[in-house]
Amino acid sequence: MKETIVNDIDTYIAGFPKATQQLLQQMRSTIQKAAPTAGEKMGYGIPTFTLYGNLVHFAGYKNHIGFYPGAGGIEKFRNEIAAYKSAKGSVQFPIGQPLPLALVTKIVQFRVKQNEEKVIAKKSNKKMPKRT
Image (cartoon, rainbow, N blue to C red):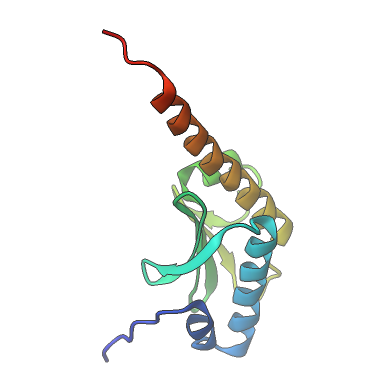
C-alpha cells in the first residue's frame, strides 16, 4: 500500500478514528494557546509548530499520541513525564487516557522561551565587535 503525503494538518487529523481526532485536536489547540504566535505546518510528515525554527511536533498513532518537544523539553520536565514512555526528544501519551494538557502547555511555553533566547543570543553575538 502506497502511503499518501498529507500537506495540511486538518487533512492529517481527519485521517484518524474519531477518538484519536479529538485527542489530536486537543493537542493542536493546547499548543496554539501556549504559543499563539507560532506558525503551523507539516514537517517530517507530522503536524509541526514553528517559532524561530521548529518548536514542537505531535502525531497520532494506533495506541498513543506522540509529542516531540525536543531533547531540552523532555529533559526539563523529566520528572513530570516519568509516568509516560519517553525517549530523548519525545513522549507518548496513551490513547484512552486524558492528555496531560497542563503539562503540554508548560513544555510548549518552555520551548518558546528556548527558541526566543536562541534568537536573542544570535543577535547579540552579531553585534559584538570581532577581536583581532
